[in-house]
Image (cartoon, rainbow, N blue to C red):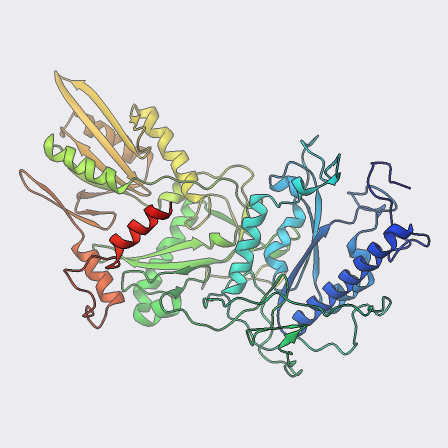
Length: 579
């Protein structure tokens, strides 16, 4: 008997999760194989957990529970009711996360559940707060019936935003230094004893590929305590007929952390980044050891800026909505060109969740080609060049009404709330490091420039031009915006000039500093004479050499040798012949 929608007949329901009493003979083997696959999957994931690994198991959500807001049918029998999966969830303390894929851009509603091991779950927990807000959907997740059978492949792919979130969480875990101690071993021989394993071919595992990992902790990953009473579980180096090529345990949909240290880079607490070309402190501990009074004063000045700006509201931890994760605030230290010490408080934006903490993030920056073009125009048109700096530019933007981010208190400035726990910062205005901060800043500055009368360049949206006739003379003003730096070119100055009226309006509306004639921008040194504008990168190149070639330039770096293979002409010829 077929199902009402034209698909195959049911072979299980909630009351008979391992199979209905009278399954049609042509589907009995399919039911047995399905149960065995589930049993083996649970066994593999349990073995991975015992060996210190992590896992994610994905399947359609349970829509047969009458008290559930996503209830669909009383007989619905999901994977999550299988005895082996229940035992896996209980024994590994895994978390079940349910969400609609349409909330992440899918064309069908498709409620989905993820069973996540405990180190992965914190990074995906926010998915459980997504809700379907659509009155209808373009497609049905189950697929459609065709002449050759039931087709659901068109809806099997995950939406891109979901893929990005999974990749980010797994990458942060992969790059995390965690304890190498395995989970406590399991004593029972089978995950699901109610389904005896038939005498079939051995289980085989995918051969693991070699991996390159970084030493990069993420605050969303909950690490084990470094001390365990249970000894490390020895892992057998074979699973079935294929030997594993790595001493690290591996299984389908699993991940291991290592202590491999990268050749170059530093820990930012969020992402692996190339060493910054400066001698500025990289951590608060280093800053305090170097100049406690100076850097502490810089920190207090930054905190004062945020308080005056109303960047956040401090609340008790108990006031944070249930399930919302907290994002860390970190200090970034820099010595300015004047020698002043600058401490900038940044949100660890890579731990924000798309669709929960922010939506769009794109923020344009002035292109290097525009810098060269504007310098050439200034030289040929005899225009003056000056640089303005927006003080704490991102703090001068505005968040959308639904963009709420909860952060830990700034390091070194935590206070306890009424509940005895450290108080939490509810971000009210953009803060450096937030995924959407740059976009919010631009969406505040650019409309003001257009309202003032500037014309936005089509080839580079960060370049604005303006021309006015004042007392019979043509006054020209050109701006190049690079985040919080304003590169200005002007033909006239003095009282009554276009440049004077603009700077008066600029200083009235925004908190800015006049840094004088431009001397550098985008790591480019700019020098001017009466007839020439010269752009150089000597300092930047010197920093690169000092950082990455501290022992001098190797002999293999020859001035007469091009940075390519000596057989390049032959390679090009071969490529053309095989095309």
